[in-house]
Length: 89
Image (cartoon, rainbow, N blue to C red; front, side, top):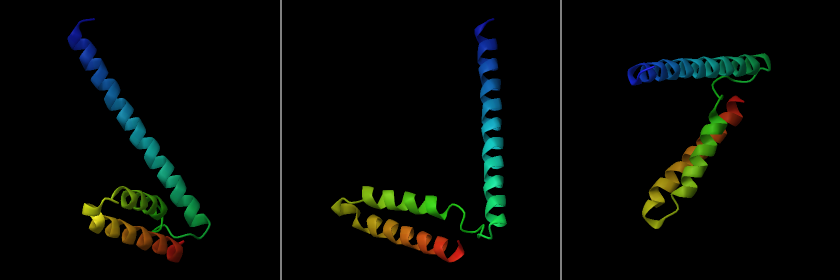
């Protein structure tokens, strides 16, 4: 097998892997949505907790004096997402 064939094969494998990951992700998301609907929870709040944790982590990272505005922004964003999840959830 020459080097062109090896590159072509690796590109095909990479594309297939990416498509498989995308299908798996969509299938898991759909299952989570169905589970939320079945228990009467809001679909709109799905993922708010994850986004809130991300915003909190970003606020902690932005603790340098020059980034106080970023910290305030991320703390506010985290509070907003948590409140949204409690209202909807």
